[in-house]
Amino acid sequence: MASRLVASHVEAGYGSVRVLHDVSVNVNAGETVVLLGSNGNGKSTLIKCITGIVQPTSGEIYLERDGARIDLVGKSPQEVVDLGIALVPEGRRLFPKLTVEENLLLGAFRMGARSKIDSNLAFVFEAFPPLRERRNQLAGNMSGGEQQMVAVARALMSDPEILLVDEPSVGLAPILVSRMIAKIKELKDQRHLTVLMAEQNFNQAIKIADRGYIIVHGQIEFEGGSAADLRDNDMIKQYYLGL
Image 1: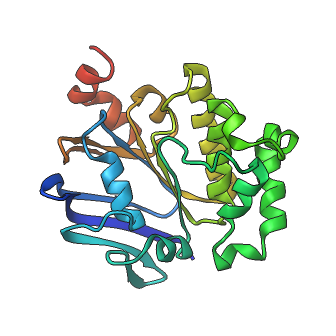
Image 2: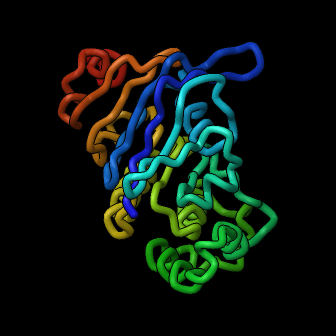
């Protein structure tokens, strides 16, 4: 049931403020695609459009699955999750007064994941051993790195096919960013996921990217057909690598 995720000519914003301008990206089944850009350039808005949190004013967002097209525009976030798309949100967005395990179980709310709660819980505890040790700890009392583990694990509890990861480096020390990016790659391979990751830390994102896009002021300024294309791009060299 491999799916391809497509956003085509998307325009979106908040009230009278338009944020995305004719944005088109696609993520093929099994790929890790990165959406690169600094804060305020529209990365999170595109992720919110895909998940149904923000509705585009024009354009198309859809899945191609087994020869069929499934439109996402107009669907609620719950309906999008039910289609096998999970979000690791920017800033983690945990329930701070619930325990680690309670946060994880909320991730398994979708009908397709409920029969797999035990096996998925065992998987995320194996992937993130500190969470097993602290399963009864309040999520709000954990460090930023531990909370990021919970956020990723909660998304996996929905048994997704497509994982959207929004700014996993925010608020983390550099060594923790490196570990988390590596863990996302590991989990992607283990679970045969398709990943779209919005990130401003080029040096970390490029470590796991198959290819990617650069978004500037709500427009796609460059599409790289490979990680090498991104490394060799003049815009990347100037703004991200200081060359």
